[in-house]
Amino acid sequence: MTKRRAEDPTGLLFAMPDGSKITTLIDQLNAALREAGIERSTFGEKYSIYSLRHFYAVNALRKGVGVFEVARNMGTSVEIIQEYYGKQATAAVFATRLGD
Image (cartoon, rainbow, N blue to C red; front, top):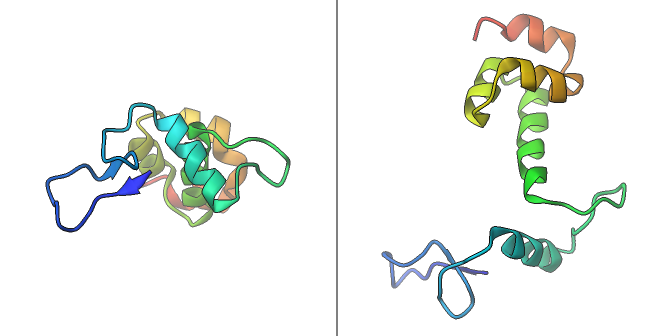
């Protein structure tokens, strides 16, 4: 994956090394993770595109972002956020941020 060059501001933001359009996001994610040396979690699980979504939700909740805002940003319901990511936030975060 290559970043857009400054001399071509109308070019693609991310591109293949030859400058062509990226056709599969998973291949690019795998290449970026491989280059960074972080292909697997501390539990040995391979990272996926879903890992980025999970990372956002968990970190937002841990930092005190309201559950309604996280749900809106992720395009899902508060119930789904609470069901899948609720254990990542303290009860106080949910209780104090419900009015968001």
